[in-house]
Length: 157
Length: 263
Image (cartoon, rainbow over all chains, first blue to last red):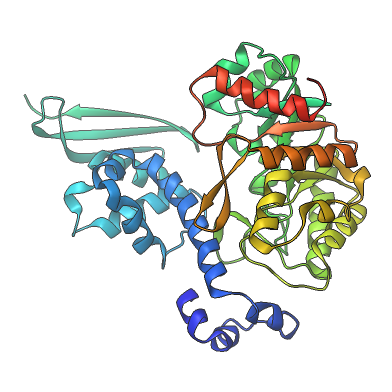
C-alpha cells in the first residue's frame, strides 16, 4: 500500500475510505517519510524476531535484515503472541529457498509459543555438540502464558 | 529533582549496587509479569518508582484492550509508583497491532480519545498520569498545533507531561522547527518528568535508537527545559547497546545530575 501511495495517493485514499475531514492530511503525507517511518517499525519488529530466532538470524548474516524486510513488507501478524507468530512467519518465508538456515529448535519454539496448548512433543533433526545431526524429541510444558520449560531428548544411541 | 534510569534486566546488577546519583527507577509495565511483586517491592524499598506503559494504545478509538489495562494495573499495584505514564500515540487499530508507537493526527477527535483513555487508566490505577511525546518521521497536519494539542490534552485528561527531550530534539531536526520555541509554548507547570538518551543518525535523518550516550546538544536542550519547568524527575532511557562498563553508565547519570543542578 505504501508503494501504491507513492504512485497514486488519491486512489489509496479512496480504497481506504479515508474520511473527508482527514483526506487533506492523508494526501499531504510524504512517501519518503512514510517509508522511513515504516522502516523504523519494521526494524523494531526485526529486533524482536531476532531475539526469538538468534541462531537463524546469525546464520543468515547480513542477509537477515533484507530477508526480513522482504517478508515483513506485506505481512503483519495480529492477535496474541505476535512476536512468536512473526518469528514463525519469517521461518515460513525462509522455506524452502533458505530452509537449511532455519534452526529447527527455534522454529518449533516459536510454533509452541504462538499456540495455546499446555504440552507439546515435536520431532526435530538438529546438530548435537559433536556436529552430527540427530533426531530428537523436543518437549514443551507450559506453566503460564509467558513461562514454559523445554527439553531435547535425542533418540537412539 | 530525582535522577534515575529505566529499569532493564541488563542493568539489574549495577542497580543492585545502589549507584551514586540514582534515586529513582522507571519500570516498564510490559517487562514484568504476574510474579514480579516481591521484586518490585524490593526495588520500591530502595528507589522511587514510576510505571511506564508501551502498549495501552491510548490513541486508538473504541474500547481499550482489557487484558493489557489489567496487566498494567497489576504492575502498578505491585510497584506502587509515584505516577504512571504512557504515550501520545497509538500502537494498534481494530485490524492490526503495529507493536510500536505511531503519531496521532492533531485533531479534536484524537484529543477526545486520548483524554478519555488516559483518564480511564489513571482512575483505574488510582495514580496520576503523565503523557509522553513521541518521535515521528511523519508530519501529520491537523486542526491544532502540537503544543496546543498537548496543552489541551493535559487539561482535559487532568494529566502531566513526560517530556521526552530526545524525541523533541529529533522531531525539531527532522521537521525543521526550533525546540526551545516549542518548549515555551507548553504550559510549564505540566512538565513533571523528562526522558533523555542519545540520538542516532541515518543519513540526514535523526532517529531514536535509545542506544547512544547523551550528546551535548541534548544536554543543552534539557537544561533549557529544567529552567522553564518544575521538573521532578529525569530518567535515562537507554535500551540498546547498554554499556558493559559501569563507569560509562556513571558518566551518563552524571550528565543528568548536572542538568538537575546536583553537580
